[in-house]
Image 1: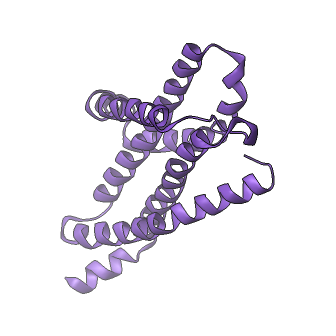
Image 2: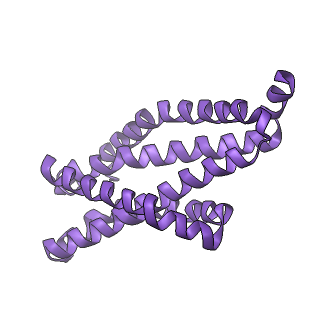
Length: 186
């Protein structure tokens, strides 16, 4: 059985699932790295010039929204749309969330502080909604993609791919962020 488990772990289906999970982790961890960086840099450099309390408040709001999403929203959406459709939707939303992040600094001065914070928390909700939906869905898809006798091997292989991309994502995101600041592209 171990031979069949290893051959299944390296099958096209399992490799696609592991790659999807690894890529998702790379993008989401990079986004999680870039978000507080953008919040902390000065307005003149294209950031939000938040202090640590403001950054903490924004991330606290994101945490509360994550709990709401995992306990209430995702289970209901899964009943209506199914896991694969939710994963596909997350794959559409996450790049949009990444693209919108730098524009938060551009709209900061166009509205009141209260309205900006409402917009920021809405952004954080969409961010946590799409990322959590992606992670939950891809994990379910991985677990459903393998027969019971090889699920541990396939899951372990997927976790290995995700761990590798989780290891490189902060350095990659930090380096790209630094490069963008040096080239006036926040």
